[in-house]
Length: 370
Image 1: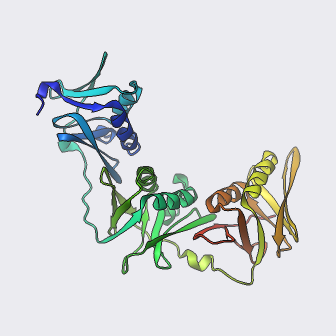
Image 2 (image 1 turned 180 degrees about the horizontal axis):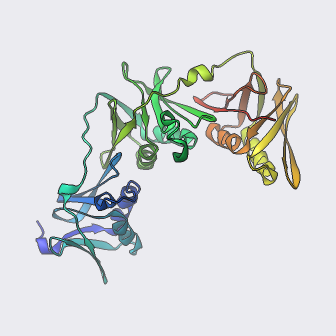
Image 3 (image 1 turned 180 degrees about the vertical axis):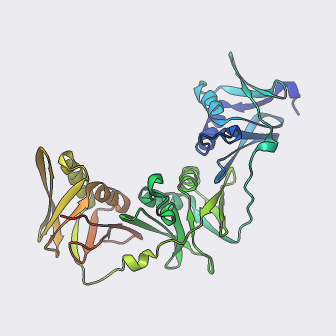
């Protein structure tokens, strides 16, 4: 084992990559310890942990020179130091005294104040429900729904929509997110564990899990209880609180019906057309849709002009309605695919959007007044 005076050594690129995830959890707080990362070294392994009391993330990375250490320092500063170094550089971490950590690389040297690990918070967890899901599949499902989560400003009024709903979707794991005006539901191919209850996951947990799992091609173990959820990727582990509310029963809101009017069109062509119309839209992003047998006509008016676009389509609908242009564009990105079907019972009814060749992804949009 290396002498204590030599300190720990790690590749700067490895530390920067781990700290990028760690720093994403840290938040501004009146408690200095919540701005810090817990550094724990045992042998040739370094364990880095951050927490905001709702989400706790741990990264495990190799050291090029091992040792023993247990302390906390400012997470953002340590990340910025590692990020600023040249490719191939190595960093030495050593305790100057009981209050200062020295970070050194070549001719660069910094000292950071330390706070003892005894003050660092920890989230206890023991799973009641478990499953394994492929990392890329989970990442794709997350990307398709996360944009529909209720924003922070409106959470107080509708706390049940303050996260992503992990639940049983016809026997497989599904993710759902809504802000009350739009809804996104993504099915996976992973069986739902029988007898398990669904949970609402905080967006910060979902964002971090998506970033971590994007580099993981294997299966990720996920476990949860009524108030906690955790995922473990081997070199990382994340634990978080869940939203203590019952999620809306969206199946009652978006039944698949055979008596609805439909429009079938190219989703990418629709997205590009909406973008052009939005160059001249009102403040509320309202775009009027007129369904004709062979096309959808879109118009928008503002105080100083108007916009007009036509998208080829096969329509059984023959009415006018209006949508928020941003919601339509997002739905096209979420659903993807070459050919998209939009279903509505009437001009004031919700719109269900999915691929003609279904892949388990559904977007739902509330219309606006024409």
